[in-house]
Length: 437
Image 1 (cartoon, rainbow, N blue to C red):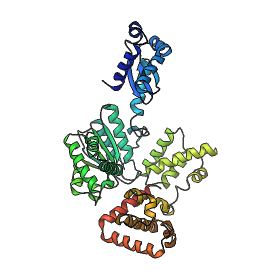
Image 2 (image 1 turned 135 degrees about the horizontal axis):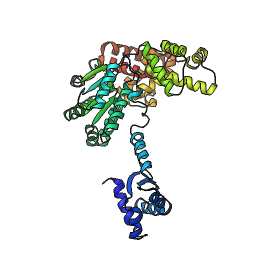
Image 3 (image 1 turned 45 degrees about the vertical axis):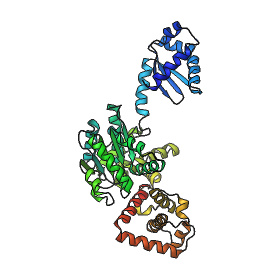
Image 4 (image 1 turned 135 degrees about the vertical axis):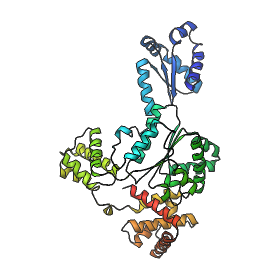
């Protein structure tokens, strides 16, 4: 019995104190509880007449009973058959991975650069656990890996609504594990992930180098794989290039199919721009599509972002679409990558995220080994990725003098040359910084 049914049985018992058995049988004998969510109780009545009578005469009785049960006020909605179908269709999609509804296979533009990954993702979505398990999709940021993960999730959810589908990012998996260990919820954590029918992990590269996380992933993978549950990973690199990843995990990630996504060619870029514009109800002239496709060559997310910005610019300013308007609207995106420099705040923020510390601690005077290393890496990346002087960098870190900054730069440069693990960490953080532009 589901929660709504249990509640409805108790509501009927309570209403029996206020009305006769004949009244209950006449109007509620075929009423079905649909759901109890937040502060709303939803019922279904098969005829419009009964629905109208319940809504006009008896909703207050239902609300009174609910208040007795929960000491809270509830809204009561009574649906007819058509309304129930509409509600079920809406709830089926709106409550699953909210905010990702547009990431479906029919909105994924296929070209030479992503054909294999798209075909493999479709196959996995059609027959989860039966082929390409695990599926490992790799490629640079902004090329559509996450789109394919969401598309897999939505397709499986549509075809198998009872499946437990988990989507999670690699760094979130790590943070949840740390919290579970700290709070003594290890078993709860394991049951959550090892009980999945479909396990989708985005940016799996962020579990590399984290011993506890890799240990947990090893056992989670084994459990799911032995149960023939579908596993899909995305990463910015293939397993063999994840140097801080344990060999036993690299091997398992390569058991299924590796599918890469590379930057789209010119024709695919044009198709992406046209598709995005059409979905937004905007028709771009061919010369503008060509202009965008010629200038943005490596990132699908930027292509879509440009269309969004052009539309917003047109709506706000009201200018007609011409070359000058487009360039004015997106001149910052048309800049060469070397012209777009991150701020010290962005660099510090990404270092803090990686090491799970706050910016005040990183900028401050703490001298523990981990905090000192994080601070030195932040200084190093600030020097590498901005035009700030040593003195200006020192000011960003609690007014340290330039000699302290120099020592930090020297130490990190030495680590990059002689410590592959630390070099890999710096590469990961650098990727995260660049992904924000």
